[in-house]
Structure formats: C-alpha cells, structure tokens
Image (cartoon, rainbow, N blue to C red; front, side, top):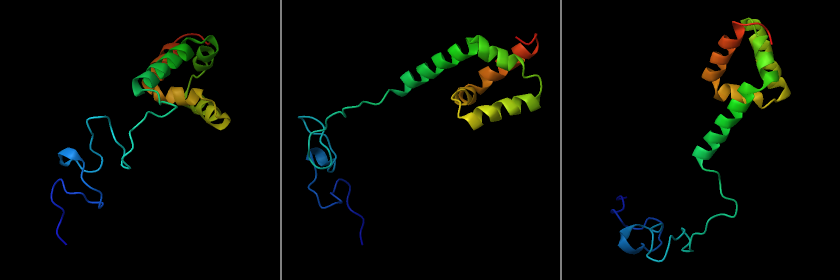
Length: 119
C-alpha cells in the first residue's frame, strides 16, 4: 500500500479547508473531530504555573511552621530522618509530597536546623 499524500484525509472524512485534515480550524472557530464547535469544559484545569505557585506557597508555609521546624530540628542522623519520612509515608501525610517536591530546600532547612538546638 502506498502512504497517503500530504494533506489527504486518512480517515475517510473530507479534508478541512486549507488541507489541514479533519481537525483543522475554520474561520468561524475551532472545530472538533466530529465537526462541532469546540467549547471550553465546565471545569477548567488550573494552569501549571498556578499549581507551581501554590506548591511554593504551601512549602513556604510548611517551612515556617513551628511544629514542622521542631520535628525537623530533632532529626540528628540518617536513621531518625528515614524513620520520620517513613512515618509520613505510612500515615499518608501530604507533608511527604511537599518534602519530595522541595527536596533541595528541605535539605537546606535540615542542615540549618541540625546545627542548632532542638526546638
């Protein structure tokens, strides 16, 4: 079988104006594969940049939380760090995901607090 020519419909559907295939845009809006006009969904997704901003804000709030800082300041060796992270994982605590997402910032915080007294 020969490969289809560029711009030729491959699904048996007629080509859209401009030779863009069945998903091409028309002058009166964007059409779906079924030829209907595209409409935004009723529940829009958050933009990735907004999600990253929210994560950064949640990390900043967590990193400044007195109770979290007290927990981290008590982690004086690898064994206690692993036990702490495993406890977060076992309880399904969302703090673990924030720590994983902000691993470098957590390491800096851990080093900073480990050099001082337990809070």
